[in-house]
Length: 312
Image (cartoon, rainbow, N blue to C red; front, side, top):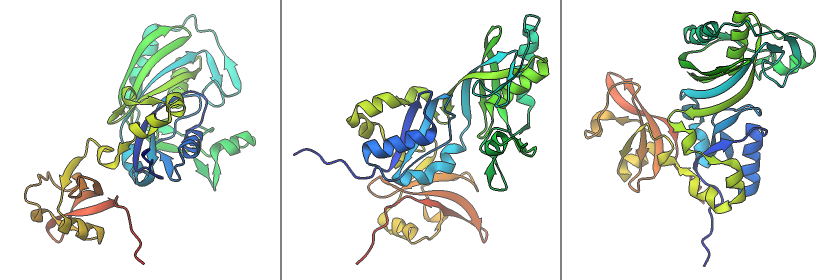
């Protein structure tokens, strides 16, 4: 007999999104094509960008905040001498300048300067909201969104190639960093303007683009989708894993905290240490974090991952 596929998978799919579709349209296509009712994603990728997109399925949607907090790495190409209202090539051109006199060293220094940024102005064309309306909605209506700054951190940035007016670069940054705003800031620093021409997301720690499967391939080969979905217990590979017996598992299902000293074989570094707890069958049970309670360290539930059953 032909093996029946589960109606709803629980886990994540490491996807290579092509240029064109939005992150949400990828989610909707997977819902429709594979009959998955509960699907989300771990970090929006603009339609003009390609690369790593983490698709969350079933109970995997509970992992969203922990997937999204990982550092991200991008490879991009910016074009000097052009400025648009959206900071990329999708917007209306505001100015165009000659770049023949732009100094190579000034470009390298400008990109190196990104590492000193601790905050960034939110672009007028963005999904940030003011009084319930997205900035891009206000901008398209001819209104100026309020100036809003956000904290960012950039661990690494480098110039990969310069072939004026194009500059290829790589940057590793925290979540929520607007790469097109970095390109815009470089253009303003040099004095000729710049727009983001191309962008590929290469990494969302700990996942890399080399781990991803192409969207087109997944859609053309149905069985590959089911093969490539990582189960919950493998969806946070950088978290420590702890297997517990049924007694402890039942306490967790009842919402109880577990004293660290009740699991003497588990190595704990201190408060804030995070674990994926597995049941006796090595299936994901819950996400746990070590906290202090009344002078005692306890494992506290961050998110329960067990299937809830309804009793008749």
